[in-house]
Amino acid sequence: MFIGHFGVGLAGKKVDSKISLGTLFLAAQWLDLVWPVFILLGLEKVEIAPGMTASNPLDFIYYPFSHSLFFVIIWALIFGFVYYFFKKNIKSAILLGGLVLSHWILDWIVHVPDLPILPWGNLKVGLGLWDYPVIAVIIELAIFFSGVYFYLSVTKSKNKKGTFGFWGLITFFVVVYVMNLFGPPPPSVKAIGYAGLLQWLFIPLAYWIDRNRMFTRSEFSTATESKS
Image (cartoon, rainbow, N blue to C red; front, side):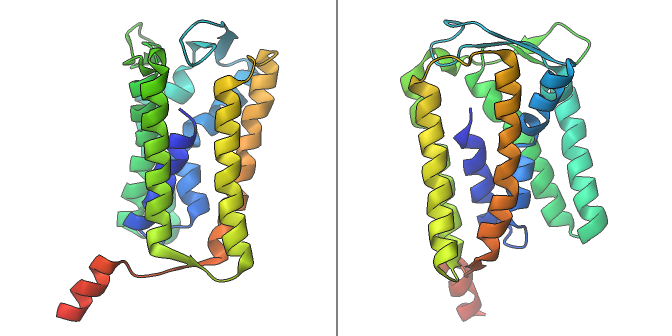
């Protein structure tokens, strides 16, 4: 799953407007941000295996530090604790920790049984939705565009940068997603690692977009205030 994780990050703005979109993206995509680092350092292992699933040509052989449920829970706790340490906002900290965990849950839905529960065990899980590409694509696009809807429902642009920056990013996500679906397999494992590192660029871009947009009250909150 790729853009589905960003969809969850976008939806997080609906839950807590105090958190920047950049931080929401950082939490929701954290596992896939550290994974290419571990790949390039040789700490985790992936192989290119066309036909591994109907949707994805990668065989995730060994990635306990980024994607075992044990370490994902640790990452979630660390992420939430660090945010609370600096911001002293328990609601936001819990949300961000939940977003880190949400990444593993979404991966569990689409991956074949290759997600380890414990870093030192052989038990691996995954529902294997990647073997049903049409259903997988429908679900991921639904998550992504639901996130876009929720983000737009509580923000509006301050200027043209907020409008074109946001829609430019959304368009880019969709284009990359389509290329991943229909393009050739990656040429090498190192190429996967370096391409994965490029995802870090989305984080400062999301901070910049969010600074050029403003939070607007939802219809629900407006109606609640009018009754009080």
